[in-house]
Every structure is written in structure tokens, then in C-alpha cells.
Image (cartoon, rainbow, N blue to C red; front, side, top):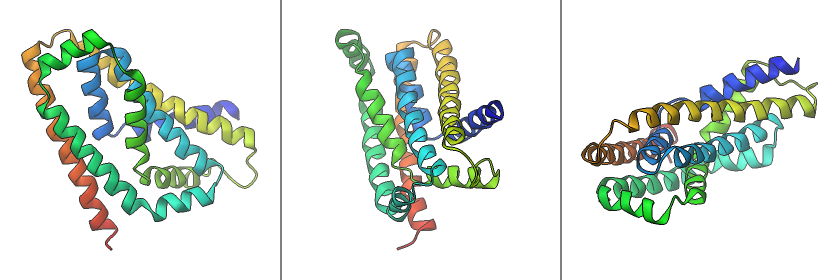
Length: 211
């Protein structure tokens, strides 16, 4: 039974994390600019955010989930605005200076982790996705033990981690073939994509949750 929960949890976590959005693009940008470890740590920040939402959905912490869902308008607007500023910063940062700065100062891994954690957590629809998955598949039911739920939510986290290792690993493999001039264009395109994602996030709030 536990093995079945582990497999299902990994699949759920992978499926929720895998859609390519601003966080995935940001992890790719971190990998190209700062290296494999920075990309992985950024991915872990997002994976821990998924774990947080999976715990809430799995253990039915209704007070927190209700607060997040009812306030998702403000939370997603705030997250969208932060993404816009991040995208613009990436797009207009001098690539050569950025690379030299990272080599001189080293990677600020804590900042990478916290950034993706909070950006992911500003999307409360993630908890709705987990609630829908858990209830739709009936993997959690009234008789589920705390141990079973704990195994499931940890497996969800593991699934998200696996996705980010695959993503970052692929990007890092191709990094060896990328020159500085290519990196300049990649940063510009990445910044624009993140800004576009941010505008989509903000627009979707008004379209699907009108005031």
C-alpha cells in the first residue's frame, strides 16, 4: 500500500511541477548563468512550496487553505508584480558583468531558494490542483492514516524534485555549448518570457476572478 502511495505521489508531484511556467524558466536561467547547483537549489525552493501546499491539501488544513484561496487575488497580483520586476532585471542586466560577478562573489544559494519558494507560493491555485487530484483519485479518504498521508505528500515533494533535476540536468548539459553572446540573447528572451508570464498571471486573475 505504501509503495503504491509513493508511486502515485511522485506522479502527482511531477505532474504539478512539470508545466513550463515562470519558475521553470527562472530555474533554466539560473542554471545557465550561475551553474548546476544554483539551478537545483532554485528548483528545490519551488518543490518545497509544492510540499507546503500538498501538506495543506493532504491533511485538510482548511483554515490555511481557505485563507489562501479567498485571498488569491491579492497574492497572485503581488506575485505577478514581483515577476515583472525580476523579468525586467534579467532582460536588462549586463550578461558579462553578471557572469564575472557570480565568479567573484560565488552563488547566493539561499537567495535562489527563497526567491523560487515565495514566487511559487504566490500561486494558490496549486493547492486547488492538489485538492482536485487527491479527491479525484480518492488516494486520500476519511480512513487514511496520518502515516499514509505523510508518505503521499513526501512523495509529491520527491516527484517535484525529480522534475527539477531532469530540467536542470538537460539545461546544464547544453550549457557547455553556449557562448557569452548566446547567453546575452538567452537572458533577453528569458526576461521577456517571465514578464509575459507575469502579465498572464495578472490578467487571469481579472478574467477568472473578476472583482
